[in-house]
Every structure is written in structure tokens, then in C-alpha cells.
Image 1 (cartoon, rainbow, N blue to C red):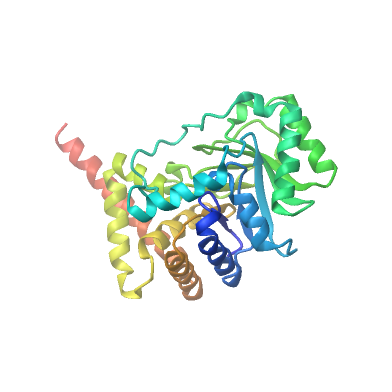
Image 2 (cartoon, rainbow, N blue to C red):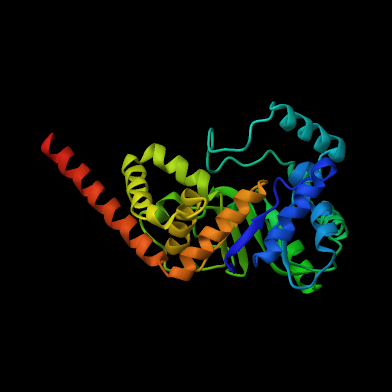
Length: 312
């Protein structure tokens, strides 16, 4: 589970604190030791919830961010979300309407040096830590990172408050001219499913795996067919959360040097996904699954091109 990071975007306190605690405890029991959070996550409650649950334990890594602030009245809003979900008025997050590259509307003033410093100090307090593993600029494109941002990150790293520094956004990852010391946390590039990447010039974490694949299937019918056929081939394994396990297995095989964020608020789904992923590892069939998928994708794509040529 070294390449897997648990995303805390929907980790909330208030009436759902117990559910959040169970999720984090399950992650720890299953070997996940890295958690991704931000001041705005969980309607502004996620950092405090994570800090309380982990209690400062030293065997975990935490990624947090600057550039976004917790919303006002975070705890009442957490209760309101709970009520809406309980009554069935809140739609769960899904792939519908997903658009890679659409950044959240953050105030540019949040990236002033004083604001970033204050935000980071507050995050450390909520997380109950003096040091974290990764500190990222939240929802910025690589080309917009300026000297003020880089100076802040470098100072935090030099002071020992974080081990690694970088940036995060919702765009597909692309190589940039930034220093390799900056880590990147971006959406899984859809084209990596077609052309695997052997390595990257910097440490990379991919998120939105399921949503990107769903988005890509709508634009590439051959991808949907290849995924369906590959899923049918391995149906005999009876893997729990089979579709999600297949998606992450293909992503991990396509980018072996990357890390991947997985997020859910459903404990059974989390445990099923981790059990399925572990089963794939135990059987050593990850490469075979990826190979079967690519062979089908190549065959289907080749057939489509031949058909187009015949009707040309």
C-alpha cells in the first residue's frame, strides 16, 4: 500500500466524526500510512478531525496545502450536510460533469506570504503536529507559481516544518520547467492509459482516477470496450470492488513510480477495495491485467481504424 494515499476531502466532524474515525482506523489497520488533506476539506473540518484521530502518531505521513481557507461556520455546515445526506437531498460525488483542469475559485490573496504562513501554522495546529511530510500550493497551475510562493515553500522546508514541497491542481499532469524538487499532485492523465509512462522527472501523485477514466470512456469508446472485456476476463477472481480495483491496477501499472489518492466515505467500500487490491498483489497478476487490457485496446483501436479506412 506504499503507493496509496487516502484522500480526506470528505472527512468531516460533527455527527459523522465516528464514521471518519472508523475510516482512518481501517486505513491504518490495512497498512495505509499517508493521508491527503487541506484546510478547506470536509467543509473545513478534515484537518482537525484527522489530527484528533491520529493523535500525533509518528508512523504516518500527511500532505496538506496552502491557498484555501476553511469556510465560515464549518461545524454547522458539517451538520447540515449530514442532515441532507440522511434525508437523501445530497448527491454523492460522481463522474457526472467532471472536467479536468477546472480549478477551484480560490482568492489569489491567499497566496500572499503572510496568508500562506498563517494558513500553514493553523494547519499544523489542527493536525497537532510540528512537521508534515508534504506542503503543497493548492489549486495552482505550474506556470503561475511565482517567487513569493517558491520562497514560502523553501523557507518552510528549510525550517523543518515539512519534508517535501510542491503544488496541486485538477489538471492532467504535464511535465513543466519547475525545479524537480517540487512535487506535483494532479489528475491522472487520460493518455497514460494508452501510452504508459516509465518514470517522471519529479515525484508525482495522481488523483481523480475513477472520474478521469469515466471521462475518458465517454470520449474514447474503444477504451470502454477494452475495460469491459478485461473486467470480464478476470471476473472469475470475484474481486470485491472489482471495477475500482481494475481502474487502480491499470493506473498503477501505467505509472509505476507514481502515488495514487483514493477517497471514500463508505467503510465497506474502502475495505473491499483494499482487499481486492491486495489480492491482485498476492497473485502477482497486475502486469497480466495491464497486458490484457492493452492488447484489447490495441486490437479494438486497430479494427476501428481499418473500418474507417474501408469506408474512406
